[in-house]
Length: 220
Image 1 (cartoon, rainbow, N blue to C red):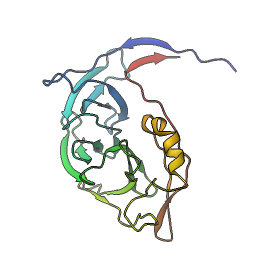
Image 2 (cartoon, one colour):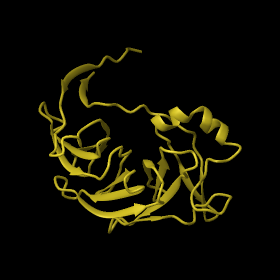
Image 3 (cartoon, rainbow, N blue to C red):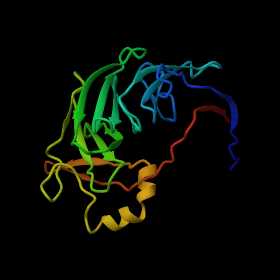
Image 4 (spheres, rainbow, N blue to C red):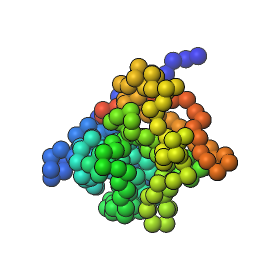
């Protein structure tokens, strides 16, 4: 099998906003419904990249979220769901007008929750959110109203302790979490969510994906 060789074509820089930091540490590109690419940054900026299929892609800082260390976003339809440590939960942006996102809802999970990774399961119609802060933080399933963008906790998803969400503070899981703490924080927790007997449980293994700190164009 022939090896694939990649060649850097060009490096493009992100738009710098008025606060001079929202463009710092670009992380997660997500394809928007209009074909442009949205990139979240640790400075809690949302950069929109247009012209990605041309020789001159352009970046525009279209939204700045509160705080910093914003985590992994998810796009569902024309909504961008962004985890936010500043509000201990998530912020939903309507990106139907991709150049001018509008906040439509917020959900604070607790006074201390460090929301970080998110992912959408189209079959279950649920959003999963994990924490990047403490092992005692739980995994939650969220319902997204795709007409209004409102987020609510799925209170049917409960652990054996009867509380909403799934806890990793368990004798069977805690040793693994302790041994792999750094990896768990630097990768993506991929979850398959199934409905069975009116409850949800986690089926898939944990997969780690190393995130990048820059955006470049490659050809092969």
